[in-house]
View 1: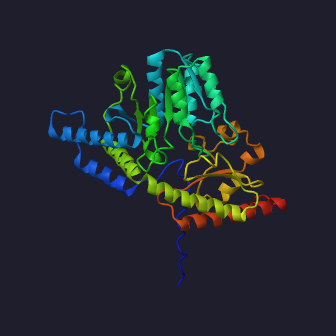
View 2: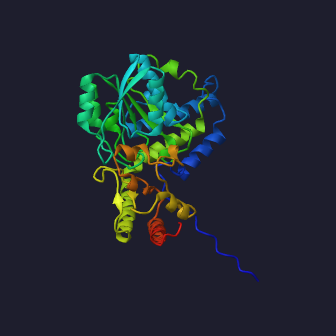
View 3: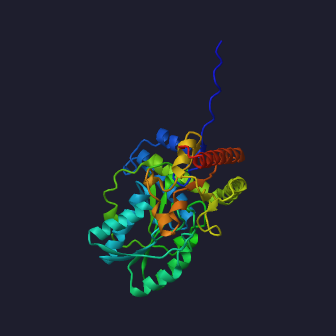
Length: 387
């Protein structure tokens, strides 16, 4: 009798920057919405339509509680990228051709949208300075404000190296100069307190799938949107009630459990970092280690190309070299270039991120796999054997 091989354990998921698994409680809420809310929420002439509309109202309140804004200022979009584009449309409607300042380490979706405006002749761009930790140089922001701006775009936390930015301080400076502000809070939501930011920002963007909610749903919080909001959202179509309910549930959970979850992922992140440092003598940790997201670890392993690592461990670990939007790119990311990370290090960079459902066993297994792969690659390179 032939014995069957034991099934392989599932890969350890360490790519929460790219997307988070949907929380089972969110799935339950979405399934309940699909079962019990069949009507179009715009059909308020009958009870079922009003029930669907009420579910959206509840979700809007849950988002507002997480963000720290009025529920009426919460507007649902197809994605965070869509929310960014709509925010830029609102800014254009309010100010006309825009003088925009942004960090060169913004998410590719923001940079693409800004470049598109520039190509269309609708904006001029000024890139703020960041240091070798991807941290904003505040002096460059103040200098740009003195030269004259209409809009400043800032991310609350970096999606690649995890650096957390002094956004409230920056927004206060912009408010003093009557400059509009757009904040990408997709990575920060549920991990830092957004209330001080939302109090000052003109436009704030969230994404469902970064906070254990569904993909394909985002938020634009626009407390000072002006008279053009209805026009810009007029073609939004029928609201996706289950996705909105899922996002609202994810925000409610994030709001209620943020402190506990941050402590959990911080402990695991530090365990992951300590394990790698213990076994890899020259490990480099990138980003602002004193101001970073609690679940984020961005490392470089000198002499160990990241593509060789991914080729060896991809069936055991889910991790990445940078933003999912740039997945498969054959050159260092724009974030690492802006940080002036040496090319030799950039080519060895790995982005790791733990999450709500990660366990200590997952972390220890990941350390074992990564260390084993790195040592094998180093040994092969030293012997001049192809990896």
